[in-house]
Length: 142
Image (cartoon, rainbow, N blue to C red; front, side, top):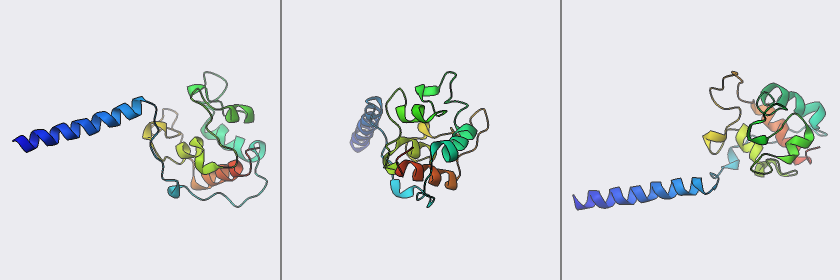
């Protein structure tokens, strides 16, 4: 009986620590080895390659009207500015970019984009779309 109480106390402490870490704003670790590799295409630009993907999959929630988390993806400037919580794109480093983690559905499920079971029925981005976004960011996000 005494052992059970100790284990319950230990598990409760671990759970509490995990919840406190989330409340403190610490982000879940992301295994970047699970990211698809960047596309091989050179000269990727927001206007010609990325905006059509964002228009199809992101702008409904991250456009001009009431952008969720104050993140605008309907313009290059908005994408580079980031969200209410800070920048989501690290030009030159797609593996460190929160946007890539979220569209690849790695890390905290609450941040997956588009969200699972979203009301608009927007499907997840394809591996090829994620790879193209990675190439764009790695090439400087222009």
